[in-house]
Amino acid sequence: MCLQLNTSPAGSQRRNAVLLDKEWRKKRRGEAETRGDTKGTFVCCPGFLRGLVDLDPEPVTIVEGGGRDGPTSGRPHGDLCRLRSSSLEIKEKEIREKGSEILREQLDAAKRELKLKDKECERLSQVRNQLEQELEELTASLFEEAHKMVREANVKQAGAEKQLNEAQGKIDVLQAEVTALKTLVLTSTPSSPNRQLHPQLQSTGAGGSYKRGAGHIRNNSVSGAFQTSSGKHDPSAVSVQSVANEEREMDSVLFAEFLLWKEHPSLDRSTAFLSRIYREDIGPCLSFTRSELSQLIQRAVENNSLTIEPVAMSALPMVKASALECGGPKKCALSGLSRVCRHRIKLGDKGSYYYISPSSRARITAVCNFFTYIRYIQQGLVRQNAEQMFWEVMRLRRDMTVAKLGFYLTDQG
Image 1: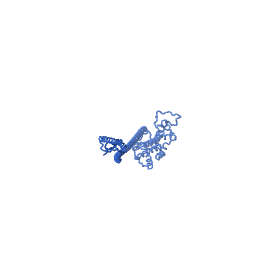
Image 2 (image 1 turned 90 degrees about the vertical axis):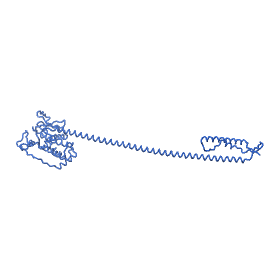
Image 3 (image 1 turned 45 degrees about the horizontal axis):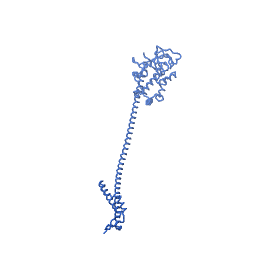
Image 4 (image 1 turned 120 degrees about the horizontal axis):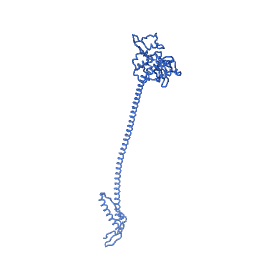
């Protein structure tokens, strides 16, 4: 009986490789157990495959008695190689499957992580959009509030300016009233009392003041109209019986013209109301012999720059030859007639003085009273209704007509 042993160098090398592989596997298994890895992993020692490659296909037969025999048949050795290669393929396949499974798990985990990150990105995007929308709404509300504040400030400013204008208008009215009152006080003299300051004179009418005595009523203005140049009464003068109650009837055409003028009162003589009065009353009343001076007086009356003052008879100035055109104490500068001139007029602040007769003074003052009253209406100082204003205008027109006809009041006492 002989025992076949592979005593060739290749056989010993194979045995050493197998031993090294076992020791290396044992070591790796211990390390895996230490790490807690329960899955078995087939790992080949580097020398194991090298030993398999270097296997000698020629085994040595050991004969009983210690001798060596020649090489035996190579079939068992080829079967062993095939078995080992098939086991290696199986192990390699298992390793590949496990590796691919691990990779698939890692890929699934990466996909899940990507999905989570996509959801987080979507949530952050929604938060960003919401913040942007809130920021836009806040900006719009701030701009709207700013515009609202600007509008309120503009409204308040407009209201303040309106109140300021109204206050200035009231101040102007008050100043005009004060000026008018001063004018009334300054223009009221004993010889020509202002009827608005003395209401008791309103009942006298255009004929002047009336005195009752022994059942007869004498009109002083009428009796004065018949005075001679020496100032004495004409013996043929008779007393005039006045009517107890004066009747009046309104002219619709004149009243319509007055109402139309009263809507927008002004001193424009182009209106129908003032045009008629200029043509019928003012023009004839201020028509004197010296036409140029008459025009200057009319212009001064319209501009409210005419001054009338009494003349002190005790100290009459000497009239020079160069001043004859201004008249004198005994000659009227307007009519040119020799009359006792107790008043003089001045056109503006720097003009010359002109001596005027009582008749000329009455005509000028009648026109001045008319302009004063319509100025009061224009300034809104007359607190009467339209009908009362109209009749007052008609009374002033009658005064101008009476003065034009030569009737005037004289100083009593």
